[in-house]
Length: 93
Image (cartoon, rainbow, N blue to C red):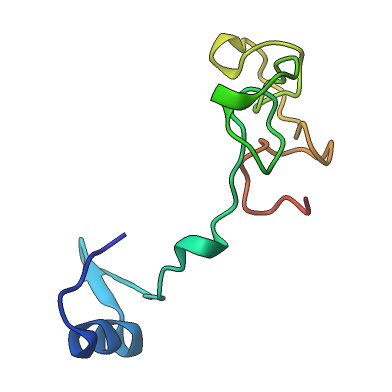
């Protein structure tokens, strides 16, 4: 996330992109209101772990343990049960 001081500069970056480390990256406007809130305790959406009353679910393997304690090589989403971590942008949930 970049913070830009002028609308002109921001628009130019959106139109042309930005080169970082020799790689051209596309730029888009950040909309904080569109950001999904995901709980890192139960992996569900709409709340955060400090307010969560559910049992823990691993974000990596969907097991009934904290993600930090995961020892599994398998990947399974706690939300859709597909083969990716719960934080994957490819998740249908």
